[in-house]
Image 1 (cartoon, rainbow, N blue to C red):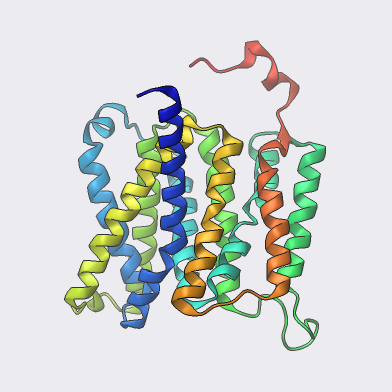
Image 2: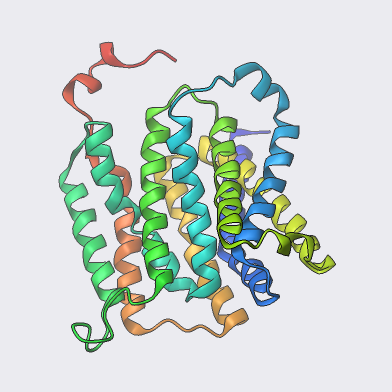
Length: 306
């Protein structure tokens, strides 16, 4: 395959991933409306993805996997990131959830500074400002100081915490450069499945898995295979494309989500959400130039060997 075709295929992979994530809320919500909790759905879907991943990448895990302490916080961060996202879209407005989730570059500033010793550039300060203004615009409601306060819904807190966990997981992932991609993917699969299991046990609802109808099982299998395939093709695309181009394509998730929310749920964004969303998208597009590494880390002698 020629380099041009490689790049076009990589772009298609990232766009496909964005489309899947733009529509994935619908089957999760459909399961919720059938009386199957997000805990059960998440546990089963990600266990299915884990089974597929361990089967396909068996040799990678056998030859390259070594336990590292960073795997524990990675599993918690990536697990909560995906679990809180699917939970929030089953209960709240899809685009409001996504836009609050996309505040993750703002949280990444803090984690990059603490864990990677990176400092903000001027562009980075612009990203912070745009993100904060965008968040304020989205959350604004008449009488916000009174009873109808911002973040008055649980799903909004879930979305914000999911973006926070996403930023933390990404910074940890950048720090753990020696971990194979398959191991990082496994952190997502087992992290989400664990969150679902803990939720079911704490609520005494494990029995709902056995009582799930055939159509529910069919949806679980379809979602598991879709999310597993998406994780594989997106990783391929992200390794080929420049980071800025990949980020631009990934933001198409917002377009697909807005379309699907309108067509499938009749959700229409308010003017303040359009404006706040535009500010957050602009901040996300600049997020690749937010920080600079310490001088010591930039010197050639300090570069880690390949």
